[in-house]
Length: 115
Image (spheres, rainbow, N blue to C red):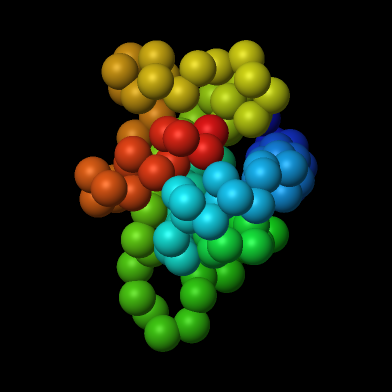
């Protein structure tokens, strides 16, 4: 089991990877969304925001307003790190039940093009 700090580092790496996505691709596929990433084995949830300029850094504080996230991921700590490091394929992880995503169908299609 990875630590909370290792998960924070993985999410920071994910933010950096989103910054590398071509601006035209982001403009085509990104719609502003709030994102939560629940890591049940550590009993922690991280929150971020996806927008045309990239992905904001994740925090453990939910966004103000109390509105639930638009895109909700649930993933074990080790799988989160493996996914961000490219060692775990998102499609296989979804089919195998290692990653759960609660989002609209359109959001799923957009995310698939970006990850």
